[in-house]
Length: 335
Image (cartoon, rainbow, N blue to C red; front, side, top):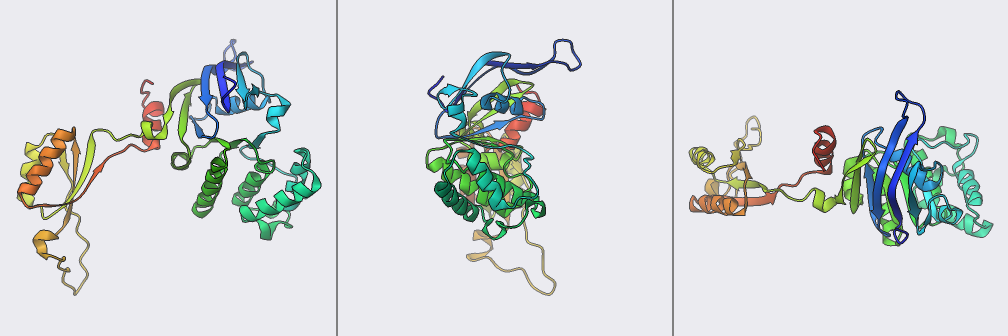
């Protein structure tokens, strides 16, 4: 377990108090391995045990049972902490400091010497696009600016493991993209990204693997590609399909659903444009959806071609990570 960036074995944590005499079981025998150099997403509803796991990895809290390692050392080891960058959710800094002072303060806490600290502060302020705000007190910062500054703080020591809790919370779409690019840069240099976020679209774009926690237990784990892999479901966009033939296909091909033709709204005083190649080659775009295996798809394509229909696109339908999450958590699908 000590070769991975993060590893847990039968890790459990119970907090005293709560509605039951037995306390609150935040984690229940968690076995988890995060290989080095990956971007890993930790998902789960509120109260699933995500924050507890992070506290145990950092040595802020101590397990009731089991063990955990970080970067080959037991969790909480000061040598491991020196190689971690951490951005907590809703982080706070002294409001009388400006952005540059905050980074120098945390750089000193990280043990960076003055010359190296000054160089890193300059680099990171530019990289997170906060250079112009460096001497402005942070009590004037927006939530998005605080997130950028917090990310720069987490990167000061060029960490081998970057633990981030909701890093894009309050950030606009452009800022989310910039943060996403920055995280991918860190991954490219060999750092491990441990990301805790409710923005599942961001997790899907950044992470290689994800784990889903529910009530302190691991209910699903795997690569993003495997979890969202195409099912036996297809979207087929066609042109030149006659309405009467569409109805016949829908009645004769099991699993086929047809949406109405997608026509642009008419413009007053103007005739609709004639598509290149004539009405038969162009025409309205019709979207079909087929639930079935590849032989069923090939049979449908043969029928469409026999009718002279133009097939514009055939796309295997994938589930989004949000779809998977809702299915596992919201609908109680077994792991």
